[in-house]
Length: 246
Image (cartoon, rainbow, N blue to C red; front, side, top):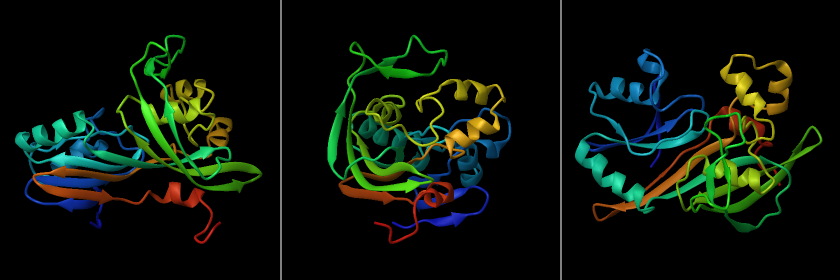
């Protein structure tokens, strides 16, 4: 199912009487933190629908781009919400990470919980007493930029813990490019929220938003297989080598 651009709001991947699927841009929060309706995804959804009935079935971090399901009624939200809760929805992400990851497939199985040693209130970490979390990782390609090695990964989370993909990849020694919390120096995130991000921080991050994109969703609902795909934005794509790279 292909998308079509909707200027100033979002890219629509699919829409019918019950469901709206959009490609959320990186840098847009799902729920409002300001009064401007355009400052959040749900605000833009309500502008598009002309009603306050739209409900987000899944959510993405501010800097994560990609597919978000929106139910047009409470009944549909309940049905799809149950699928999300039971892990019946297959989610696949694309990620650009630091380091060279040999083309292969491996699983990260590491429980997650609150990082009590961190100054960042929302930060979690791998800990033995945490909640079970498992992520399948498939390395697609390796490439170099300015003498540094990077890898493009396809990632499938089997559980839905907060920041799961970001934490697991950092735990494996390959943090996501541009990750301000799990990229190795959490003080960058603290400076960001305080409005003190400096040129040295930006140079170290390489990207304005971390390179994580929700690329594919598939699930069976109402006796039908639904599958949606989306492309990452220009910032993500431009970091990769030109088409045809090996």
